[in-house]
Image (cartoon, rainbow, N blue to C red; front, top):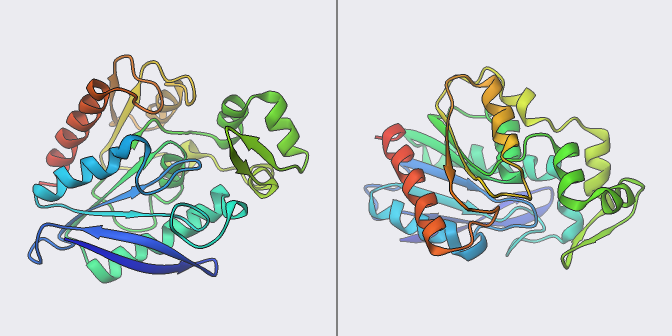
Length: 253
């Protein structure tokens, strides 16, 4: 079963999908997905859709949503800032807590969505966090991803074209004005944390998950061999889902 809900944030209506097998399971064990940079609730290769269907069959409730300015939600590309998406995410987290009232809750954050997850890690009570290919510190990571010339141009107050996506000057202003440091935000977080990273990721380098693990001594990490940031290839996606499901079953049992 899939429900579509409209949740307002920053004056924009966000589209949120809640998927579960039956009324008995609705909301009981909830996994909330936070999409990444220029992303949406589907993800490349429908990875989160496919994983979500599998998890629903096992009795979990999966919540996927588009931030303001992303996917099917209202707003345009100027709404994509890390602080703005973090505000959107907090609205979703509290909606889940207050409306679905889960017995257990986990966040799955991908890429920039992992950074935003770290920034929100104490917003509601969580049973665990699963990170896919996490951004750690915004300034360093986006300097690397966008390249120094493009990043510097954006930081000077300009809009940037990145592979056909419009990155607004607001995105860069947010990075300039705010620390946006996931490592500092999640330090000493005591609940289980699990990292999955492609060992061939050249967009968000594996050293990002390593930095997180330095402040989370109890955290675990698994590499998907040969995988880049998008986990291109069926075998790599199969490994991503396998490792994800093993962790989810262990923490959300």
